[in-house]
Image 1 (tube, rainbow, N blue to C red):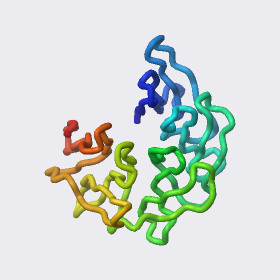
Image 2: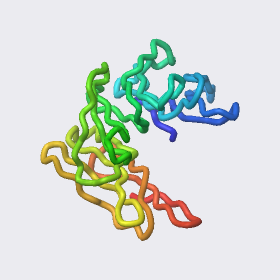
Image 3: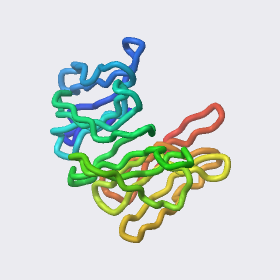
Image 4: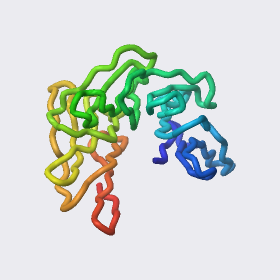
Length: 204
């Protein structure tokens, strides 16, 4: 899950270099790799804030996988969620004030999209109309649009939730699975992975 910094000079990613998942940052100019988060348990899902000063991440060292936010150097890390659910895939709002992520906190145990302040507080579920939602990406060009992976039949397709209308719509017609959507900067296009039994390909 590599993710660019806003300026395009760094990439944050998860690696199993030490047999355990830790979060690293690659500086493209020097090709230097530095450790951002290596705590007990799982360290994953690193994502730079829109201004590049903070990183949201998923850490499980205190029990369940929870949402944390620290500075760009991996310090001053603060836990935002506290529950018995599994949180994953945090993504920032365009203004950096909120985070969207998946959580299976509801009784069904299926992941749903939730939003909360990047400073902490209560989390609010987005009622998308789908019983399985994962891998959200918040459009920087349109603050009302969040793309995500949704369960459809026996597979998965990419959907977009419009916060202004409160509705979600499927936007792909992959023959098998369409997953891992990422917005392009223009806010009109998405890149996603088409996943077959033995194949993977990128689609626009």
